[in-house]
Image 1 (cartoon, rainbow, N blue to C red):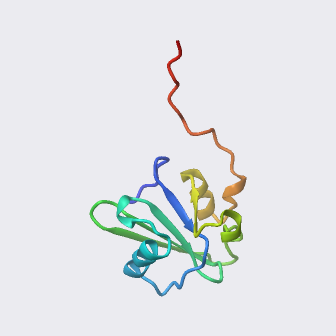
Image 2 (tube, rainbow, N blue to C red):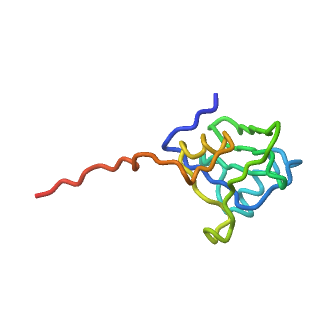
Amino acid sequence: MLQVTPQMKILVATQPVDFRKGIDGLVRLCKQTLQEDPFEGTMFVFRNRRGTALKALVYDGQGFWLCQKRLSEGRFHWWPTAGESDSLAQSLAAHQLQVLFSAGDPGRTRAAPDWRPLRKTG
């Protein structure tokens, strides 16, 4: 079963993808274009050109999961651009991904900061 955990690295591709690509085509895109290793457990999220569908690709240690969501109406209005981060992919937190999957704006979500261990003083 596919699980999205707060510890997962999630990358959203800033450029639209040809949705005729399957697992092998998206894995190649992760390696060659995004310069990321898809076998490390990173979840990659892609959008089609019209903004009506998303694909999520993740390796779970045994094989790849490829999930697709197509909206019955409307579009995914929020999407990062390469100009915002000068990168081909933008990182998202797990709670932001859930908002994106609901066609919302993950940039407007507010959550507690990530937990960090306290430093021993004295």
